[in-house]
Image 1 (cartoon, rainbow, N blue to C red):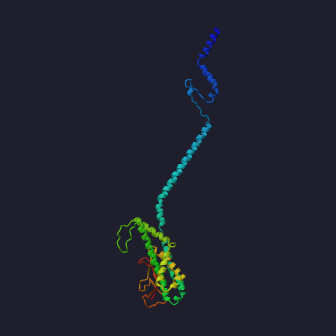
Image 2 (image 1 turned 120 degrees about the vertical axis):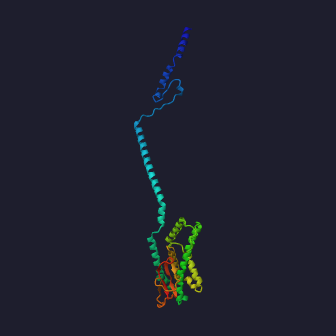
Image 3 (image 1 turned 180 degrees about the vertical axis):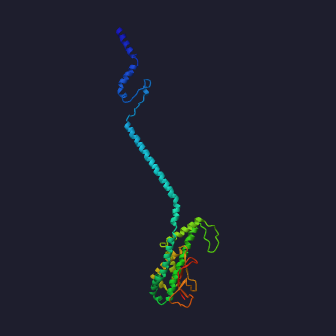
Length: 320
């Protein structure tokens, strides 16, 4: 039995060996893991040990990353500078926009003068050419073949009615704008100003006048042409052949278009056909007139004045 006790004792001695031997054995078994960066703190925290992965010591890669960061920072600074410049330019353009808009709406005086001169020239051509063509068209109507005085009165009435229609349309358009925008009405000619002048309203009316003046060539005047024609047809209902006279209708269209352009000038042009005494600066005699008389019997063509009381830019053709 002694050997048995001795064996048991040796077994107990091995079991009482210090725990450091177990740590050594564990280190041997885990040697490959420790070489990969696993660090074990101590026996007490062995169960709570954490992996401590060491960062790679590649300096070249860090240098590349730093350069990329610097490049991005430089690009960001450049982008910010460009953005600030763009914002500054936008603010400058925005500040100059009202002035540019007002300048664009203003017509240079030279342009106004050229337009007025062209319209006056067209007024003369309407008498010298278009009126002659319309007169020839009326000559082709059997009912009017020998009615020379009636034909002259028809063509004179067309230009007068065209001006009245154009003036009425202009007044109507401006009144509509005032009512829509609740603007005070303008004072009647010769009456005192009842309301203080609003600079904003004055600027608006000025802009409307410029717009109408610039669009005289394309403004829709269909109703005005129909209005003038209907007045002629209604007055001369005994001559239904006038409705089929294309030359007369074209003459009405030309007269209405020209009248619309003239009334939209500043100052607006007006007709004069009320005076009964010949004036050398306003009237010119027709070839069939009595040269010894200054009493006007008939107007063949009205005079054109530049505004009320203004100078005569085209003389009236009269028979004395």
